[in-house]
Length: 465
Ligand code: NDP
Image 1 (tube, protein in one colour):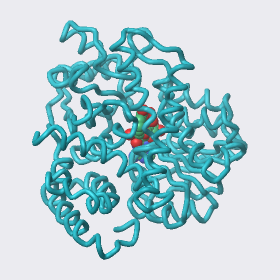
Image 2: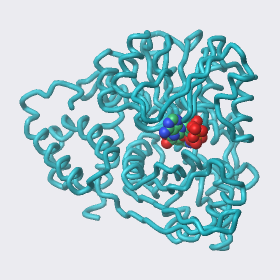
Image 3: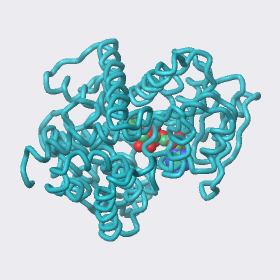
């Protein structure tokens, strides 16, 4: 697929990209999410390769799609009945050209090598955009924390870390949280690392405030996504004030997206989980958000319970296998997909456009399919791709690393201010790069090209490694 018309002089770089893409598919069979992430970035790089033949000569594309290291390991643990359980653990160390590998750990039954490779690949460009010195990585397990007791989660995390500890370190690879890995899991993982290594270091981010964590890290992805959306709106002399907003998911990213939207005068009207959607026409206010946070983070319940408590809210069940999600078929101004990959397909994108949505800011990683992305761009929407719009999380992880190295902690205001400035800078870089490469307003191209250039130039500087 192509996001823009390909002028004839680009034929050579197009052929080259196609050739590398064919090889990526052949070498990484049955990894559709990885193919999708690579294809989206490559699509934006046609013009870059035309201007910079040195990347092609040094085989930067062929190198950038090949992880520097892939770790896959057995994770045995005992459940509460004393039965042996086995899961699979992973860490993808994708690219360290601009800093130590950095990226989250995901615990979810859908986790496999291809999904983690797509996430690690995206992370390389996202981390580059933050302006901080962080390479790209991602990891996790097919372990499902849902329905497990705290002690089962702890035993799993300890076993997972026994292997992972050999491969990570504050100057080597610094994991963080992602789906299914929040403060509780990071605590268990950090405790075990410290015990194994006899070392208290900034080896993980998303830590508790009492033991090296940064203020604002839990809020950072959601807040950052809203800051990014505000920058996009500014380019059309608009603001978030009074805007009706669709938010999907009800986990970390969604919760703090809703919070910042409220702070900035917008009206969030939906949240969801893997079983269904809550549509609250009255809006989700601070009190209702506090209920969602308690429901999801403490009671670990299902989002349908919201409609039992707030009678005007409607619960719409969803089926993971269905290609229709009612959340994307509600009249609104802005959409903040914040649950998971490919949650917006072409049909959903058409529904959003039909219902008057003018802005999509991606809190989740790759929540839109390639077809949905194309529809957003064709419709001239304000479209903030994940690697730019949700980079606030990893940027604040970078700030946590900086505080750990300096052995001090900044105030809430100081971290929030730095996060806000970073999101403004990311938007500016994407906006200006899109313009420079002849596709004004196309932040997909802007993010992919700006993220790529810094990594590619660093790879050239460091020789054939
Ligand atoms: P959480 O585990 O806190 O929340 C995930 C939410 O998404 C839950 O509501 C979950 O529902 C829902 N969800 C997960 N899988 C599916 C599915 N297959 N279908 C429908 N709903 C689903 O994760 P986060 O909020 O941390 O992460 C959400 C997204 O944001 C992910 O794409 C992640 O990679 C991305 N992200 C997260 C960052 C962070 O700092 N945490 C940083 C950058 C990106 P249920 O409760 O039913 O599982």
